[in-house]
Image (cartoon, rainbow, N blue to C red; front, top):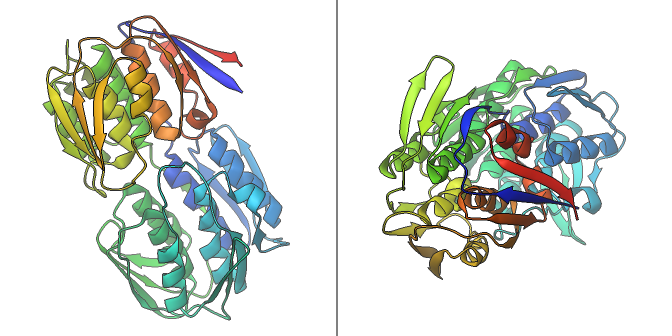
Length: 417
């Protein structure tokens, strides 16, 4: 197991290239199961979660090869329709094989998923939608067992705009008989990217990016050949790094139209954004201004940016109120930030952050993916040397982060425990 050692209080300078979006790559790779043939997905980041879904597809019988940000997938010979606990337990996105397997083969057995311990995140919406499409669903010994001769189009209302729920049902509906209407669907850019990938495969989808998505099922789909969008959360994380260190960083390859809400709040905090030909230059303030925020489904402020923004607010000039409305356990980074001297109190889903002038170094323990990113953000601004343990969380969602930080002039090194 690795740990990250960061010497803080350094001004950073340079450019960083944003990787492909993990949360777009995983469902699009899963979508290859909808068809028989050879698929290629470009701009796939080199991450532990990509390795995990590759192992899962290989277990199912597909051929999976990853090289130089490309995933090569051959899905002609699927030998089992069971996704076992040992492969599914470490990554929640594994549930995304359920819809494609059921739609293509008429049955699937998938372990209930794991992943970051940031809240319950039940899959009841996935199962409810599949049942409305005619599937027989049973839960036995920690597994979802689903059967259907052929799924049928249906009108499905999602109680909450679940991203993976929208994606799973959209993939299943692509091969269903008739029209499926998803109401209160998730609107995230990653959902749109999956829809665009499915359309290149021959799917008939309208409304992705809106609250109502219509899918007209087809009899078969072609293999995928597609390049995914850049990772908006990685881009937002590097923006907060510029903000907390008072640095100037050129961020290349990001989509600013996917970052409206985070950039609006960062501007309120005193960051300056300059649009240039090959990206956006971010100028951090001498000290950030305090800003209140509430996480919301897209296009609101993303829950995946809340922890990083809280780290920024921990050294802001006044008091900030941060409300988390998506996941009930997404304040686990607070205890670690307090170890660095941050003045944060939590009551229910609300954190009150009283800004201090300077964070101090401390040994830290990452609890989940975005919490680990927030600790890196905080450590880069802290006085002294900070050690972050359980680095495997960071490797699930950030491609070569320490290498990118080194190119910006940060003092960062990875060490074996």
